[in-house]
Amino acid sequence: MIGIIIVSYKSFEQTIKYVRNELTKVKAPHRTVVVNVGSDRASSDKLESELGDLCHVLHSEENLGYARGNNLGADYLLKLYPEIDHLLFSNDDIEFLSDNVVEVLSQRLDEMPEVGCIGPKIFDLKDNLQGPGYRRPAIGYYIRRNIGEPIFGSKRYWYEDNRPRIAEAVHIVSGCFHMVRVSSFKQVGGFDPRTFLYWEEEILSARLEKIGKKVYFEPSVAIRHYVGNTTSSAPNLLLLRSELFGQRLYFREYAKASFFMRFLLGASAKIRLFLVHLACLKRACKRLLKK
Image (cartoon, rainbow, N blue to C red; front, side, top):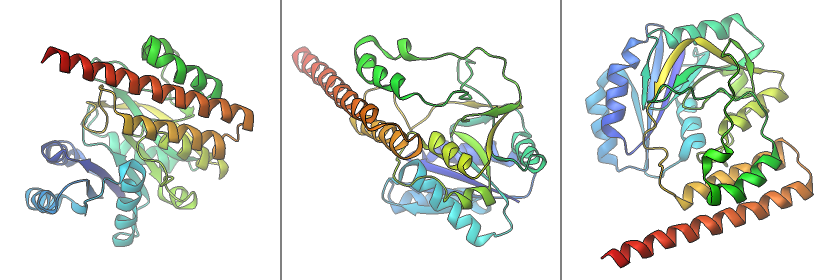
């Protein structure tokens, strides 16, 4: 059986649309839970009344973020349905381009016992491919990016890997829609609860590698990712701090970078925060002057 976990953050209509329009395409035996975070009790009650028997709803007034929210949903489903052997972690801003995407990912996990996590081909709204990630994160790249991105923009530091998208083991698949083997997920302790929104995929990959499990990319099935409420194109200092914390956590505890390189990473993170904060102040001043 497959367990499906959706963490919903103030995206009531989007969550309902996804559960009704996309998850009803899943023919394999499955159980679904929506973890409604950062919202009032009334919204969770309304989700329960709207979705009926299609899913369970868990309520949390605190915005738990990606890792803690998904861990909570996984624990809930596995306690209720111990026969679940695969877990699908999915955003609610997803369209199935292959109606059988969930079944194929589950079947491929069954066929490959050495794999602990698997993800499909993912397109954005402009039909650009999102991932997978073939390379391990390099700390030098993130030191340069932290300093340069606020000055030169993100495109200068975006690496486009044009290799053919074939079925193979990779470093990471996107966390917006990926499936894990329950036994492996339990063995590694789930997602690292110290993260909030960034670096969960890299850390999960590192944890799986320690127990001899691979991450696998399966391009025979595809989805579209609309990029909803989890992130925004506008600068957000709270999300940026979360991203930078994830950087430091990964390179300290999982990549085991040297003290000197971690010092440089920390210094570059402070510079990035300062430059982004300065840019936000400039924009605020411009808006005030226009008034």
